[in-house]
Image (cartoon, rainbow, N blue to C red; front, side, top):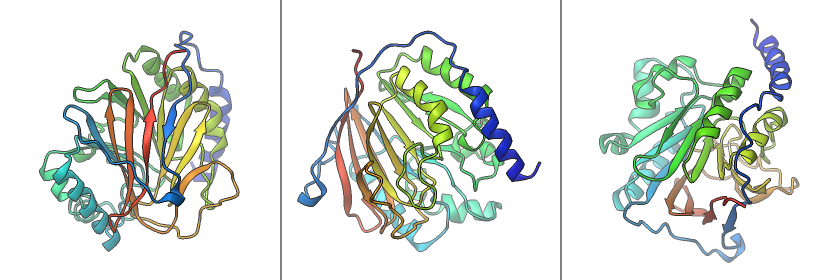
Amino acid sequence: MPRRVRSVVTLLLYVLAAGCTTAGPGTPTGPVTVQAPPPAEGATVALPGRQGSLKFGVIGDFGTGSREQYQLGEQMAKLHSTSPFELFVTVGDNIYGSERAQDLVRKFEAPYKALLDAQVKFYASLGNHDSREQRHYQPFNMNGRLYYTFKAPTQDVRFFALESSYLEPAQLQWLEAELAKSTEAWRIAFFHHPMYSSGGRHGSDLPKRRVLEPLFVKYGVSVVLTGHDHVYERVKPQQGIVYFVVGSSGQLRRGNLDRRTGITAVGNDSEQIFLAAEIDGDEMYFNAISRTGRIVDSGIIGRRQPE
């Protein structure tokens, strides 16, 4: 089926799927809280590096094999040497172009060799440039699944990886069932296409917002991680949830942020960036770090609490 026809069919499925929320009522939750210094002040909030906390990273739109990707990988390894990551999640477009064995080495295994050698696990979600066969690539820890959920090693955190290129009713039904039975304090979703974005190339995906946001609000998701637009953006909390766009870990679309949207808390469209986060109790500390080691955004998110 041609891609354009598939897109139309998928859009129709979105509309049909909007009525698929059939599980229990969920637990009402209040909005997140965010503490962050104004960008103009130049202040940063340090990651605390506490024992027993969950330290994880986020990369998206990264698999280029470029010098900039390797430089960002060096910054990831540098932070790991002082505050070790337990895991990374990817928000799609993991491998651009050909996906031969040597390409996987050049575009993934080599840039992040120090982390992989240290047994840091990467959990991938797929983007529109990714072959679905990547779900069988062992270092991505998808175990043959297009969408899946996993719990942090020891902390009270659960992640939900979605396949947002083809967000069909079966996946939405699975997502609601998994959210409904989740008992973890922190629920974090990650996938490729942003529900909120000020990127000029793509921007906010409204069909996906219509079907996903009600589930995230209903079941206490605190943070949503996406990519697709080749910029970094932390969106002002929407419906009580914090959204990040981390789409410039390899690809970068300079000058592409539309500052007129009114939804940007902090954005950057001039440097390759990854997001480092640390969850300790009810707080998630975050630093957005550029390939030169500059912290372009930082702060503390307080998870959504039962009302």
